[in-house]
Length: 386
Ligand SMILES: [Mn+2]
Image (cartoon, rainbow, N blue to C red; front, side, top):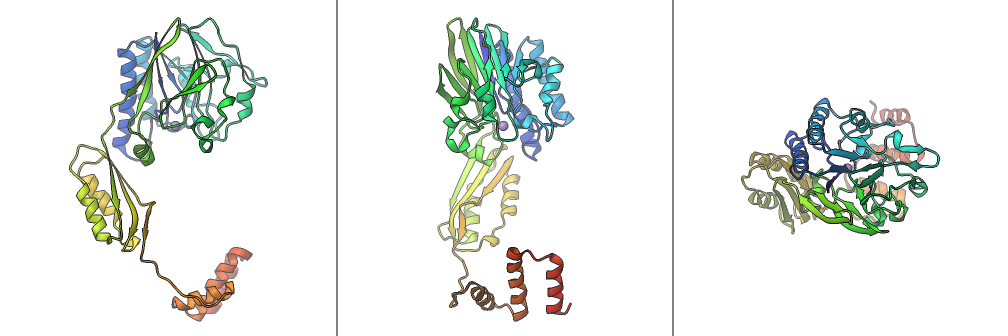
């Protein structure tokens, strides 16, 4: 028996970029086709099927068509809604619509919650597997829910699968939605979503936690941080899980161009970026400019660089200057030591007149004293005789 575990497919407008939206769909199709070709018994989706809780009609039709292909092939989909699958202010998810139309099984649908106060959770037994799950939330997760979960696991199955859409502390304390220890015990396979990186084989209780990551690079950081994108194909039999393959999806080639500023002028840096570009068939490009330039930051024409790159064929261009600074900093020597006088001296030395300094100081003070805009306007009019 086989199943696929996939997550964070983010169908919809991840980018305001049509080509990239097509990419997001193309990898989704790859997963669907792989499920059919491998004759898997079912698919587990760990949330964020859509990028937004109110997907466009176009996205809805696309997903409907893909899920229908699975239905025709007799492949069930078990899912919990992710944080993105719930619209702002809505308690139900778009996933529920597909559940009610019989195109997938929403394991956090109300029918699986036996007792809402006691968090008694039911699951499904299907093809010798037991599956149940908890949906993701937009706001901070209530860890209490996890701690109090009571699940009647069907022991009479070959594999027990728990699906959830949260980051656990095993990924790093700073990223956690909940402590790993809060997860329910007694499962073989913890199908996790929400973390767009890919993290295998986190040992927990008698099972493993698996994050397949997103199926496409959803932003610049994901392009830089991850070598590839994929999903899991799992074999199981009466002795439990036998084999897990991480299957790499066919995504666009990517280029990360690092340019060291090393006190070079803006023109030298821009020329170096240009020299690093080449004609291509829609690659993803991240340009990182790091260090200190001898020129001024506002002399860069990043818009022009981007346009040039796009004209060479790149389908996505991002320029990262978070580690770029300028050595050309103006310095003003101050002799005063009182804060109020420092402000005046600084502004005088920068060439501002008496009235301008007065107004500037009023504006600085207003951040502390909370002057009404009307009062500031009145003072300005008096000072400048407007
Ligand atoms: Mn996601």
